[in-house]
Image (cartoon, rainbow, N blue to C red; front, side, top):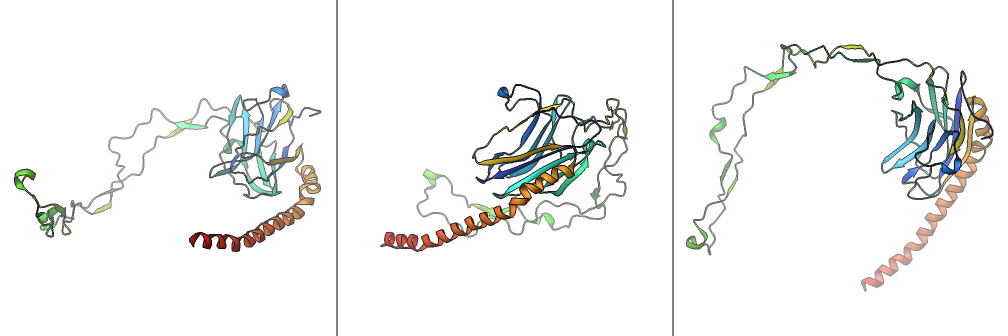
Length: 306
């Protein structure tokens, strides 16, 4: 980029349009915003401030937003899904100086929240107290056997298995050679199984025990989670796809959602209706061609049967 991008005390907005024309089944459609580096050496391990965009692997289809914080890439806890079609879609991320964010798909708000809550950027504010121990008399069984429930006297009168009444000794069975023939056993339909007392709520139950929480001495607040630590100089497309064909366009970086959306209005929004109509025409033509081929396919099958 002609100038490095920073965002101290102002919004940071990034937007990118991606079209999976090939019908993506495994691969990424994301961009990476990197600090100054040798662009010819850009690769999957290159440092970046933000990785943002759609990604799919098998049944997992999500929009990634991964921030690099203190040298580690921190994954978004949320996994918003993106449209599964072959149309162009616009992905926009807005990060504010109050450490909140918003994520839009096709200018529609899909996710929002707080950076500290939705990314593992900081240590937990509280931890379990290592000195707190479960009391010896703590009862954590929610249910107990009913002391009033007793086993019926006739419960154990039937065996688990009985001799098969329909079994017959084979005519060619030779006791001398084959040993003494034994009637095979089958499950006894009258067997009731192991008796167990009825379960009732335990009046002494105190709930699931957990140690009390205490302040985490390792926790350190950071009111500048939103801020780009190393100025952004490059936008990289780390292409990893099983099937090629994704189209990236209109990569926009700004400090105002309104300004970014104004550009999106002139690009994606101005063409998406025509793109949808063109896609519908292609689909309709493919369906018509398939119908034309059906009689020929049926005739071929009939000839093969003859």
